[in-house]
Image (cartoon, rainbow, N blue to C red; front, side):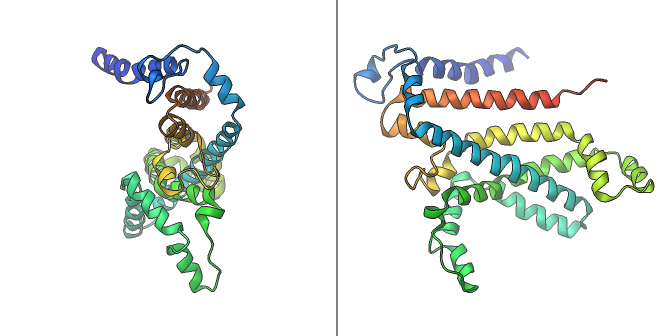
Length: 278
């Protein structure tokens, strides 16, 4: 395992350590601070806590991750996996292809499709117009709602495939015994299926949470964090501070906060993965 450990230390550990170091400096994108950055200690973090945009971005990030990943992708992926387990092969193949097609698209392509769909003159308003409903500027009036739906559309396939693999490992004789004993579909799901795939649920939640936490391209292409920072999540805020305003140190401090948030989620999910011992 030594080569793998070395690669992890070089390509993951190295950037993480540099990010922590850079967040304590005044590194800039250009100018004297780019050539000779100075150590400023916790100044970037003090500025971050005093920034009125930070709590708003933190809240929007939480809403985006919770609604699109924890609720949307996770629950919809599980529901599709359960339905496809009982569907015939043709239906399962068609549904699986449609769902996976959104996942295999490059993120930039998915972002442009999302923009074209939710734009004021886009497909969604054309469809609602056929029903006589007024046009809504989704990207201006409800930007986070549009982004959450787009992220669910794009990422559900990952959860669906994880749960399909987990459901295939549930022994059929256990489910058949419960059916013979009179357990209904909901009872079998609650007391047999979900407890037996608990580890897969925790693993899936951890992966999609971390993936969604770092979502940048979808939001940047569709709304650029607007309007008026109404969809500025932490990745967008870090990018703006580092590359639009040229304050690399401050942007890196935001990235470190995201890293710590991801670590908290990871620890929580890892605790869920541990088997309870009687």
